[in-house]
Length: 255
Image 1 (cartoon, rainbow, N blue to C red):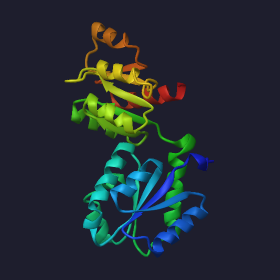
Image 2: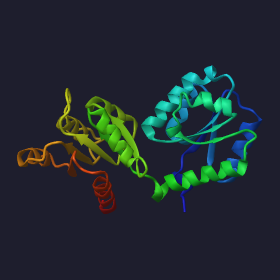
Image 3: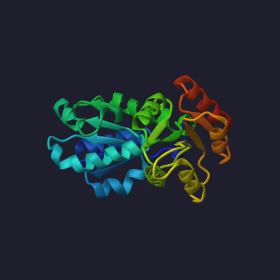
């Protein structure tokens, strides 16, 4: 059973607030979910994005009128690993997904839309992504972009995954998002893993975030250097997908 008090709002985004918008809000409200309409402007979206559980975009023939707001929504989705539903015609969808990648799109509904299918999609998403079923948030931090993307692919089906390729990016991401765990590269240029770890532990907002170090060195001296910082664990970068998933599952189950 989902506690609706824990569920954010369904944010409907469109160029104008019309008949379809009112109909959607009424039907969604009847299902016990909160809704809010905002115009497709960065200012209005910025005001509500922290309370968003899911975005619903009403597509328009004039994609240029929404380009800036679509790019902004894409950035929000990338940081929070939330999803978006698109409503509109096929040619509109083709243009819109040039801006928002399909990996961020939960579903596309063609107009005139199947309202029952739309509402079921919403309810299934809320059921599987909130309360006890809510996925944990993991931030991967490593200057090796290929490695970050590899681990992201391994974890994306089981966790909400953020990515950072430097210590500064990691600090910036954590200032905007909550993390249940950080996978932190021990050796990075400019600001290395231990320095990022120290910054996190010295800030009251981030000092309780668990950190697992990622290291490419498995010799005793290197491992002792990592362990001496008292992370919750350390992982060798040679770890295989199944072993990593098992370690993370055990960690979250025993916390």
